[in-house]
Structures are given as C-alpha cells and as structure tokens.
Image (tube, rainbow, N blue to C red; front, side):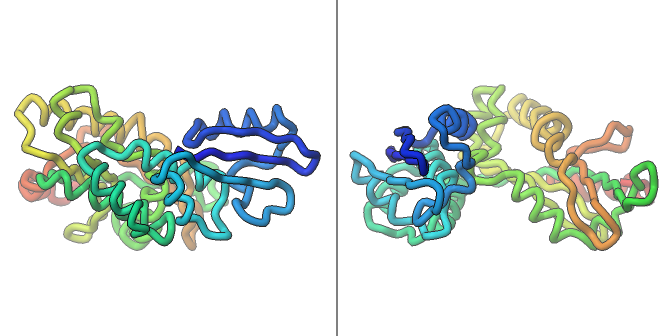
Length: 280
C-alpha cells in the first residue's frame, strides 16, 4: 500500500512495504545500521534519518496526505495497517473517502474507520464486569486494595488508559473474539471501557453486531470476553500503572472471587439488586 525508503546518516538504506510487523521493521533497520526506533523517526525533517514515502496506488498516494510534520515512521505503518485491515463491509465507503481527501489527519481517519465499523454493526450488546484496583503508594511493601469510590474518583484516567491499550495499531478487539465462526461473522467491533453506575465504577465492553447472536454464540462470546479480561487484553492492562495523586494504580477487569460476574446490560440491574452491599 505504502512504500518507504529509510536512509541513515551513514548512507545505509532500507526499502520496505507498509504495513509490516513493526518489530521486524526495527530489526531490519538495525541490521542496516539504523538504530533509531520507528516511533522516534519523523517522516519529515528528521535530523538522523531520511524517510521517503511513495505508493503505486491512488489510495496509497492519497493516504500520504494525512501525515503531519510530527508524525513518525511508526504512524505511517499504523495508517497502512488500519486501512489494509478495514472490514470489507466499510471498505467501499472508506476508499471513496480517501480518494476524495476527506481525512486531513491520521486521527480523523482512525475515528472514521471506528465509527463506520461500529455503524456497520447496528445491534449493540453491552457487557459489564467488576473492576479491582490496587495501589502502589511507594511506601508499603505490598499493594493496597482500593474500593470502588477510589476507582470512581480516577475514572477519567482509567478510561484513557484502557483506550490507550486498544490503540489503532492493535486493531479492533473483535478480531480476537473469533473462536466461534458465527460470532466472528456477526461481530464488527468490541471495545473495553468503564462506566460509573450507582456510585460504582464497572468495566464495560461494547459489542457491535450485524445481527443478534444465537444462544450458543452468546455463551461463546461471553466466555471469550472473560478470557480477554483475565488472560488477554486485561492481563496486559492490569500491569500498566495509572498515575494518581496517591501513587500508581493498577486496575483489573477480572478477579478469581465467587463474586465475579459478566452481565449484559439487561441482566445488570437484577445482579446488582441481588448483591447489594457486596464488595465489587
């Protein structure tokens, strides 16, 4: 889609086709004598590395216009990735928008791909789960368990942190919920976030589907979401510190207690009524 020629100060150069595996790209660059990582190489006026982008396709050529002076080689790879992996349901509209120069920045492109993907799944299914927070205050030898009130006070920071964990270069989480072929065919988008409900901060997973799930598909999707909360997205997220005034906060979408749940929006009120007063 996009071709890149990368030339270091010593004259060593490398040519690649984007998108590519970013870690392999960095490895190949170092093999060619270019040690600066892609995320630190500016597309324009970098003092250490010269980058030249080109494309043999009209789509690729128009995409080059979304880059600003502050964008990096890693950004170029991400743009190529999100366009080349866009769902076929939105591809005709996306390509027309690119050809008509609808995107002035990569952020506009990313936002529109997300919005079109979700719109292509008109059936919205939302799940909720408890959040567990632990605080490293820098003084105690062990982390301190914090309650829902503490988590709610830092909702904005938690929300931004989980959004960062689902950056465009990672692709939509729907691609990781594909064990059941029926779910994979219907699920357009899955997004992890948080929501405050009745004074409690809960984990929220929004799923956009082309059509409703069968009972079997619903059970499989629920199981896969729990797997992501415990061992996939959630496992990586709970290791990322979130800065607070009291110290580093670590938040998990899963816990091993008997009180753990994954409820749909329709099931949540009944669950909360049955478990009033219980620690979540």
